Image (cartoon, rainbow, N blue to C red; front, side, top):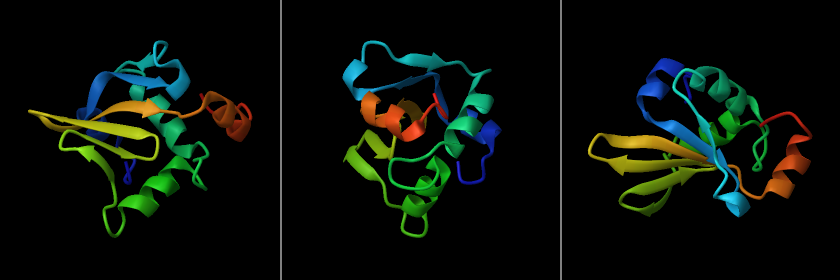
Length: 112
């Protein structure tokens, strides 16, 4: 993500990638492998709830100390990005956009 290498990131993502809100987990949108590069480039430029863009937020969390929010040995998050570990290693599996009202207010129509 930090290098914005969409080819490598595609290889580390489980498809279809789910995108949704905490309050509406039954209606996640899915992002296909072919739509992923365009979608992810846009998502990384979106405003992060924590300040700056999502890319800025990721950069601040993983450099230099590599801080992740580990839930257990098989799940971790960095901001809205959720990862799961399987036999193939860690994969991006979900973008949990949090509370829909807060997200819409923050984005003001800029991001999905």
